Length: 311
Image 1: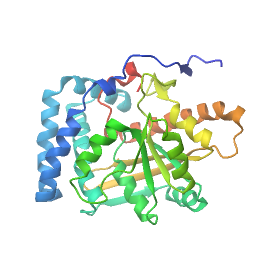
Image 2: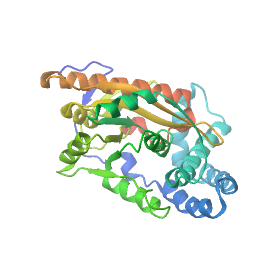
Image 3: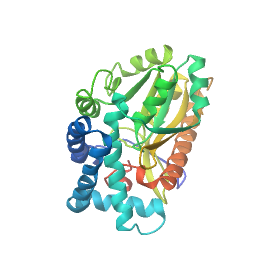
């Protein structure tokens, strides 16, 4: 397959992806602290601590701070100020803090939704669909929309070690808080995905990180080419399912804006046309991700050298 200068298929390598070798101690630490404070003192009172947590990482996490600054420089189109860099960390801390309440249904949030009819249409078709997002805002805000759609079944497809860390923290919140997860990398993962889709479930995938042992597509992103995984889109194409882009964007105070956009529909795509359709879908995904990173720059939470690692 020919590859242009701006769109190149990358073959699997053997060097571990940076996001896997960089321990996300900030997330684990904040989940532990905020779970206790949030359930004991409530959202408004416990939010005070978020400023101290953000300030700590602002001062004492130089590597993450450097990579966050590079991302903000690209997303903002200018040199980020100290306020920009602090807000980025504060938004990250806030979405983790709010995870407690959104998962437990313990607080009122102002949720606005864009594209909800797309979800309703896909639900009514009873064929299941993929919701492909990124480490952009809050996935728990999207889960609330699933509940509003008549307890729409949403299962996450993610790597088992990530799922284990998240569910360990969510388990203490209360019954029903944990994510329903299909572990990627197992031999039976594809069969489980197909089974859940055939029962009308939506499968959520975060597609802005790659592994070293999977093919990727290199595309321009915020001014510089980066690698994006082909795997989630190839699975959707193989199973002939519709794909929606998703994001739960934090907008300050108690406000979230949830967006859904049409990404691709692989129903009826012939086998010989799947690869081209997959590449178009990845391109559309990267365009949408870039748009929302520019529009809500403090919501993208990848604190590593994304462009060197390619995701």
